[in-house]
Length: 279
Image (cartoon, rainbow, N blue to C red; front, side):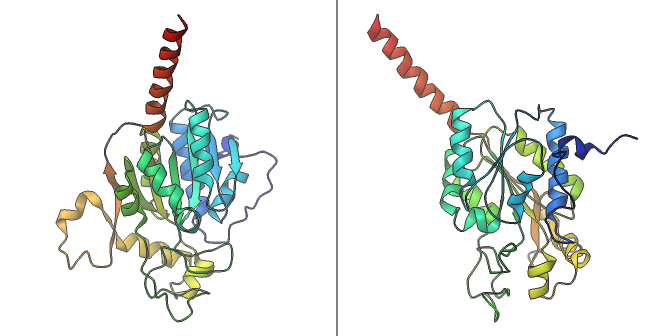
């Protein structure tokens, strides 16, 4: 009997079940990412996956690629150095809303500004899940968590809009409910030559769901289904109908010069000048 596709890309000696809580969306994201990589026909020994610290970042422990499990908030910094050293390799960053946008916020916006060719898969569960349910930079205003029992007084980041404003050349958003669309969006991100973000709303029934009385994982997924609006259908809705809803799909795509390619031009320019001086 043939094994499912995903087993071709998992570490054979890694013990399962995985570390994620029952109902967490991160395992669904891992499956979609593997399918997208398979569609790209990459040699898995050439793929580099970099993660920081957090629930989502544990993904690098399970996949059979070249992996770096780095410091909190620093996966994009590591990925930037790696891509500059080995620009021919596909570099994928696995991160979460706290890891990427709180402690890692500056790395995120400057990698987008540079348009360096890395693909960021950002699982947004609107809370710090691994450390006990503290509010994160994406926790909604009024949302509850272990550090905001009476409601979050801060206004959240819209991660996709932040990436667009910072200069990313490809930005997409989906949810753990929209599985077929997810792997196609990830594939499009991998195909883009520049900084690519796929923001994925991934349910956390253990903390975010309980603190905010959203029900179990199935109820949270139903919420994603009901509140998501494909960006291509935006014109069909009135402003009133769009209230509290969010867009999914490719939110932004604008080709522009990629950082490592531009940097290589500078290297070649000075190499030519040194050869001319030498002769």
